[in-house]
Image 1 (tube, rainbow, N blue to C red):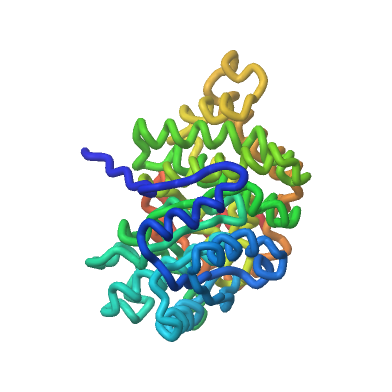
Image 2 (cartoon, rainbow, N blue to C red):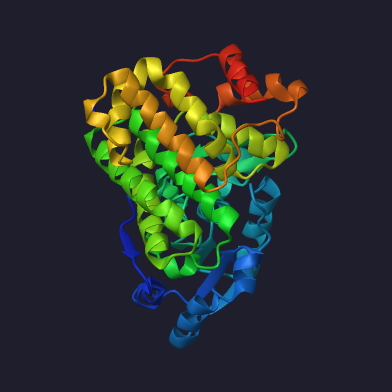
Length: 382
């Protein structure tokens, strides 16, 4: 079996990396930038680090901030119109996963207008052309959307999220500058950080894992476990470690898939607008416990990357349990809730379970599942 690996053609990492945006645009001749971003990023002043670069090289720009958390079909449609109205020739996506996902969908539709119906992009859409040239600048350390071939859009009408997988959507340039993450609030830092850990762990145990993805995921787990607590306190070293760790996690899971933690989390975000990172963080220990019978032998390596004491002297079962305990403790240390009691309503469990089972992430789970088993998992946290 061949293992396909798709990564950004170019990426920059480290403090001050946003200064490289100018050279990347200039050498390609782009002149009209469509800056997709969240309102809070624009208000925080962080965006000026980028617009100063654009002003210096004579690139004109417009802002598009009609992007909500868990972006909707309408957000994408409005973005396509705004891009065309401005006659833009490139996209600069500055924000978290919601901004990146919206930008990917916009860029794909602009260059593949036959997919103007956003729902037609669900799954593996047969697009012919690469998206509009995009530079992705994350302001959160979690989704790694700047390096993935995935994006997720919310269908508000049908109360569901749908996953799109397309090699044509990956940004040509990723600029991962930890200084762009300094204004991220504590709760968001914790949630997105645990999302990154979920990416790394689910990617490591997914059915599609391979030697290359294993390498990425174990290093990502190590970096996240080492740096998330410090990042929550806005320590610069912690921010830099998390910026790198979440990106490396994306290098892996984008190419091999995820599992039921993500498929279950998508429903919570679509139905209750639960922040994706929070949903993943609550569900991750449960997913590990559920998958232990078929993937437990891989948990020792996860625990080793998290520096669980004495893990190499434990038997497989104890090592797996110690690893799950370490994941729970990290979540608790950064303020993640332990259950879904304040989120899920009993009357919604069947709908959530059916949605999770149909989700694109579900087939990658190492343990085959069912709607009934997923329902039991939701209820166990209620």
